[in-house]
Image: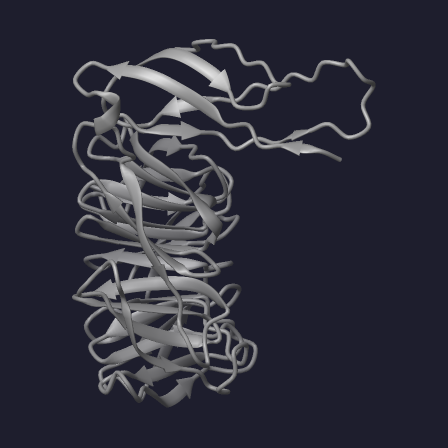
Length: 381
């Protein structure tokens, strides 16, 4: 079987830029992964100040990102001191304490007050049948998404001595966000659930709302919630009436979206093979601003200032986002797989190349570097 990697060279003239000034709206800056007893698969990343925290198979690590181009590892905690000893799925930061979920292993409480020597202050788990997926923190409470057990309410007034308060009986909790006295639960195939937690000892399920596909993750921005709906992309809901989410729009995205974060009117989407930035300042009309292929598989994403941090399975990858007028070419990845075909037979494949930037682009020529492949330009819109 022979594979051709088809590179298409585009000569173009923009209305206000020359070719030499062109750049991607998302440009790779650097990548980093822990050394020593290290993470072999990275699933989540968070940034607080000038520190980046990541977790996955192998533990949890902290990096100094004062110089974003050259992150420095400060510390790593691994329960078994081997590369694949500990599975950590998601993390949440409470000062110098980090809560990391281990699914059926519970929640580990890691003290990073001395960053070079982090240690575990304890492990919390209700029982061996409770699977901890993600957590959502408030001032004194931790809400844990525990799949078929629903949502567990945990008192963290003492951040290292967690105290069970209650279970909220929803069907299949994957993730949680909140606003005022309401929780919004990404409830897997059951959509989203709105819960009034004014009294955490007597929570009230207010409403259940369907999503276009399985609700994997959820975040809130102003009066809107954004649901990572797996193969369907992102569902957007209006919560100006907090107890009555109203479906506004589905943004389909490019791949399977297990995770997202919303900052300053932009949704940053981890879509396995792709990272995407979408303008949602008008939630009824989301606009793609930038897309970039990942190296392996993006499982988690975080944004701070002009930088996007992606937990990309094999490493944390950092991109810089340029929020200014600029064209941005995104070629769809396709392989031509010929196999044992009859000599002379013509194989045809359409490759869509999109301008996902926010400035117009005129393509004037197209060519291929492979002589046996001919290409023709067809403008779709």
